[in-house]
Length: 194
Ligand code: HEC
Image (spheres, rainbow, N blue to C red):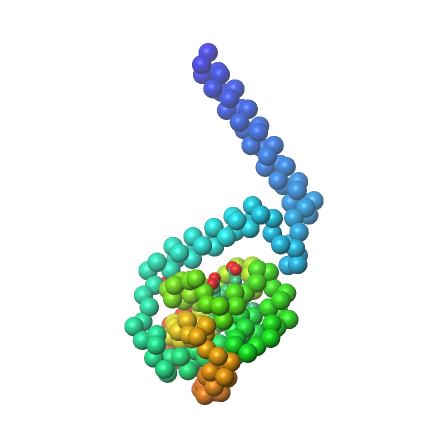
C-alpha cells in the first residue's frame, strides 16, 4: 500500500518536472528570451549569473599567489603600456570620454577609474581567462603570467592617477610589448591553469 503510494508520488513528481522542462524548452524555442545587448537581463537571470560569476572567480583564483613586487615602477610602466593599448577602449582611463564600445557593451566593462572590488588574485584570474559572453577576452591566450601581473599592478594604481599622470604613464611606457608567451614560457593556450 505505502509502496504504491510512493510510486504514485514519484510518477506525479516526474510529470511535474517534465512539464516544467517542456515549458522552459518551449519558451527557449519561441525566442522568448531577448539576447540583445541593449535589453538588460531580467532580475532573476541577472542575480543567477552574478552568483555564478562571483563563485567561479573566487574558487578558481583561490590558489593564485601574487608576486611581492606589484609596486615595482618597471612593472607599472609595462602595465601602463598594455592597458593603454588593449584595455582603455572598454575600461576607460583618466581624462578619457566614454567610448562607443564602452557604452554599448552588456554587461558594461567596469570603469577602472573607480577601482575594482576584486583582489589582485581575482583580477589576475579574470584577465588571464576572460569571462564568457561578456566581451572580456582571455588575455592569457597571448600573454604570459608576468605581463598579466603588470596589468593587475597598473589597474590597481589607476584610480589614484590624474589625467596628466595617465598621459605621462602612457607616453613613458615601453613602446612595443612582447607578445610574450615565448619570452616567459608561460600561458600556453590550454596549458596549466593558475
Ligand atoms: C571589448 C571590451 C573589453 C576589453 C578590451 C577589456 N575588457 Fe575587461 N572586461 C570587459 C567586460 C564587459 C567586463 C565585465 C564582465 C562581467 O561583468 O562579468 C570586464 C571585466 C574585467 C575585469 C573584472 C573587473 C571587476 O571588477 O569585476 C578585469 C580585472 C578586467 N576586465 C581587466 C581587463 C584588462 C586588464 C584588459 C586589457 C588587457 C581588459 N579588461 C580589456 C570588457 C573588456
